[in-house]
Amino acid sequence: MKTAVVTFPGSNCDRDMWMALREVSGRNPVKVWHGDADLPDGLDFIALPGGFSYGDYLRCGSMAANSAIMRSVVAAAGRGVPVLGVCNGFQILAESGLLPGALMRNAQLTFTCRTVGLRVENSQSLFTGAYDAGEEIRLPVAHHDGNYFADADTLDRLEGDGRVAFRYLEPVNGSQRDIAGLLNEAGNVLGMMPHPERAIEDAHGNTDGRRLFESAIGALSAA
Amino acid sequence: MKVRIHVSLKPGVLDPQGRAVHHALEGLGFTGVEDVRVGRLIELDVADGTSEDDIAQMCEKLLANTVIENYRIETTEAPKE
Figure 1 (cartoon, rainbow over the protein chains, first blue to last red):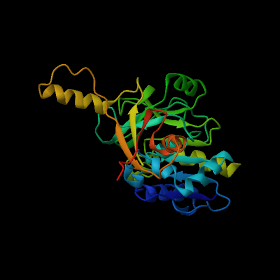
Figure 2: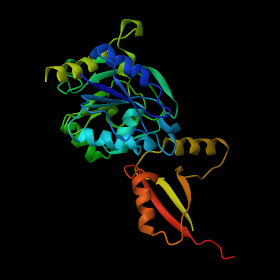
Figure 3: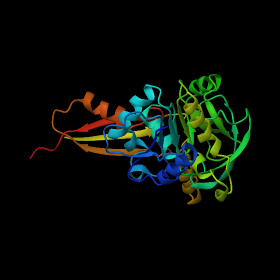
């Protein structure tokens, strides 16, 4: 199992992501720098961590989406390599076109940092197989720009295709249809604003995020 | 050659920032403001002869997120010496 965490200038959840992947996969993830043109060979899983890449200049994630390494990430995702983007990672996935829609400034305009309730809407995906259908979990959020927007036709299509992975159980940021996490069409790319890597072990006070990594790592190990 | 790119949220996309500014204007006693939308102005200094098409590509690929934003290109020739 070879996993990787991509670090951009301004990423600040890359070490948490690295620890979570190590904890669950039992191997040290590869650390990849944004300026690297190529990903290491033979990766089984790529994570884009949270943070404030490039100082959120222009739009959150827009600079990172155009970095050298993202061309390789987009190509890898196209080959079916699983890609998880959390928080700023979700914003980067949306800006890069790997996921539809956009993440806008929170409707309440404030940075929101607390633990929120979520419903697992799709428990059949690579990333959510260890959860029960409709299960309610809690994960921390910490963002200023998590207000998911897509036009009504796109939202209907996403819902119809089961691509909404997680939905907020309470008002968090004004997201259309309370969308908290979204899958791509092939199901190998997940973007989500909540932080599963911050809810891995008892010391975190919450382990609801651990099964996300166990789902993906378990499914990939079995394959 | 100076180029101004006006980036604005598409109609129908809720603009929480514009709404907050609207409320603030009302709080200051300005009446009769119907709506406020906050956008972004990007000024480029590009080589003379840069085509409108090239500039449109810059907007499409980076300067605007066309999922939520429209852009308008305004070209102003450099003043003659």
